[in-house]
Amino acid sequence: MAQTKATKAAANSVKEQRRKSLRVQISSEVRFKINSDYQQNFQNGIHNARMLNISEGGILLVSKKYVPEGAFVSLALKLRGIENLEDILGKVKRVDKGTEEYLIGV
View 1 (cartoon, rainbow, N blue to C red):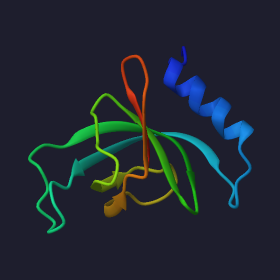
View 2: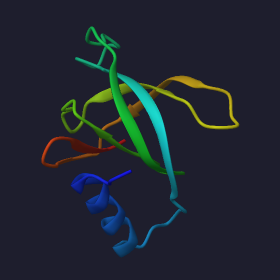
View 3: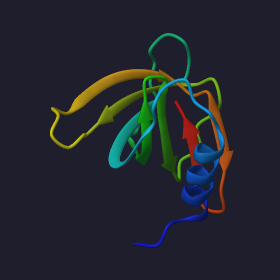
């Protein structure tokens, strides 16, 4: 499968940076809802993303849906060999625009 430009950029940036915790490269489907304010009022609609990597400090997603930096998201993750994880609250720390999708650091 061909990698997108955003995926290649993410892989290159991870290699160049020194991290405090180990990042595990993983491709897994993720569903998320965007919090519209700070009172758990999530916008209608579930959006799809793909997880690129995960670490103790967070996850890196790629999605066609824009999510503003600082927003809270409710995540549902499917990890192979592990029970599905749902209603995980995360804060968007970084958003990078690719050609057709966004890299989202949560």
